[in-house]
Amino acid sequence: MEVQKNIRRKQNNAKSKENLLWLRDNTSAHIHADLIFGLPGETYDTFKDSFNQLYHCRPHEIQMGILKRLQGSPIIRHTEAFDLRFNPLPPFNILISPDRVSFTTKQRINRFARYWDMIVDSS
Image 1 (tube, rainbow, N blue to C red):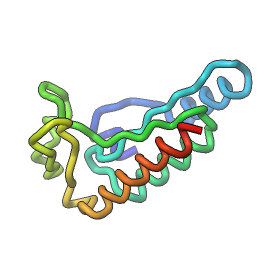
Image 2: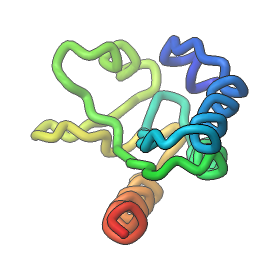
Image 3: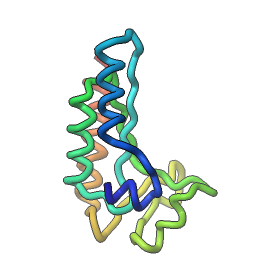
Image 4: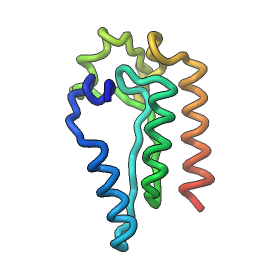
């Protein structure tokens, strides 16, 4: 909830989960869910909790991405407040958010995202 507040995303998480489960159980819709790591205020534990909640909604695919700072995107307004550090070269991905996530932890999430894409989502 803190991360959603930080990025000004108003969302009823309980209703979203209910809707995902209903779609999974009552339709033939292919559910592709995205999960982004590195949002302002996020920690390893909050990301892990978000992943577990999404996983239990049983989407067909979970695509994990790493936050990127694209020119003109609203994430720029959080760079200073959260000391976000981005790669200056494309794809402009977040390197660290030192107050919450170490470079080592970020690399761990990167490896997990690659593993998930290659092994789980590709099977």
